[in-house]
Image (cartoon, rainbow, N blue to C red; front, side, top):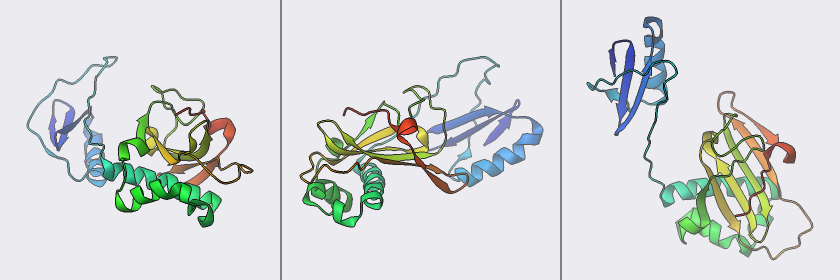
Length: 200
């Protein structure tokens, strides 16, 4: 970390965080960064600090591989199992997603993929107003049972839990939960506030 001309610059693995501060905020900023990102290290590069009202473009690079896909899939599958019960998700319709989660078998890019459509009804792909993690499971027209996962309500991922379901369609597996990482609590979502229908 470098503090110069009333700004802070942090760098880790090629990613940089740059922000302004006043003297009283420096200790608090240091403590926060050490807590949430212990890998940040000092950088000697100096960047011009944007003025109030400036538009700043931020570019990030991330690797989205099958390890990440399996983790995302497990969130959605666990939600479905908790809501519908073990006997439901042990049906053969869920064999592909179970094998992918457990053993990494199958084509991950066809089972878990990023989507632009938000989970919450009062948000858009470019505007997210709620913090926390969101997980929902639902029927999807012509696509069986799907989960959607949005860590930190940033990127959203669609998970094909069962592309077709051979059982009886006499129930509604749709269910959603909002996890608040600040309070450590979870609250159910209602259809009115979480279902932006997905047509994946």
